[in-house]
Image (cartoon, rainbow, N blue to C red; front, side, top):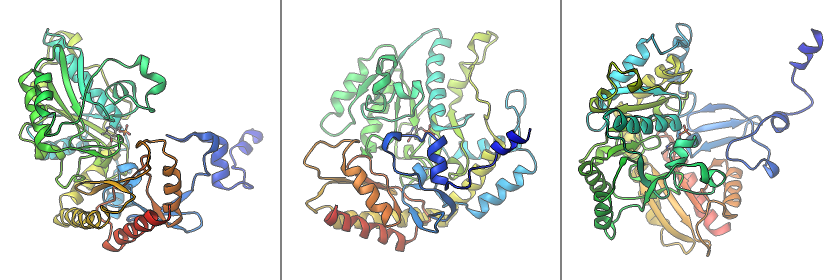
Length: 433
Ligand SMILES: *Cc1c(COP(=O)(O)O)cnc(C)c1O
């Protein structure tokens, strides 16, 4: 007995980074030559602090999830209250106020007419559910369709279905032979839009079109115009293809409006949400759909049921965090912050876009991307990436370039002062790195 309890005491001779190295396998990290992982002990507003008290500006919103700043006191209070009431309950056969209220408040502010909420616990599973809804919708209707349409450089998550509808890349390389067939198309622009719409009108057996509206995140912050997306969506609707908007990254104000699809005239049938949903506090995923889709699953035939669910479906703590985050999001001050960040970003890009090391600049709402001139192809594996990452960390800024593409995707509460500090660091990097 005493031996076992001894094993439960951490080795006090090692610091956290050393202990981490012995027992942890980190995401998206080649562990062979990984730098020591920086132990973070506290977060406040746009800052996180390491164990030595060094402060970092979280300019990537902790992988795009944080929208109102870290350890937000209002969200923390609501979560703490809920913890004392109900931490979790099975969501089949049972329900609870936070899940119902969140659905009631969310559905009316989504673009188009969304009628039902299906809960999961992350973005990839929100996408899996959306795909299953579409495929089974057609099956339940007695007209099976099995093909899916998606963008070439898309990213929809890391589970197998989500990987299948994502562009083939180094992320999927080891699994390509096992991923299902998808029809991939280029991002639309003035030059190819009529070709793409006619291609869509000729598609057969296509169940759905899944896309990241306005901006392909992991693909390199690739941006495209709403008016062309709208034409693709219209063409799909005409061809009887269901529309899935993956707003996992773009939702909750990122692109300047609450949801990116607000900029479309033709609305999605299904919307996937996660990341900013809980304000970055808890994992939660949501797939919403229209009654048209929902009703195709209503039947006396048990085989028409959507057999999908996760242990932590609709976790009450996560739902309460989302409700609190929504309260903050809907305040006028938050919208003003979004507009302020957007305007500051625009001015900064004007300033640097002619720099010889800047190959391209892009902006959608609160997100800007700067493509570094490398003389070579743009690539996630670019060596420049590691140099830039270390350069900004040293200056107390968390920026994780996607290869030679630097992007800023900050919590909306970031101050002008902190934005100016990041801009200045990027300008000096353009001279020094
Ligand atoms: C991050 C992301 C996902 C996957 O979400 P996870 O919570 O990381 O599984 C899906 N779609 C888009 C557009 C994303 O940016």
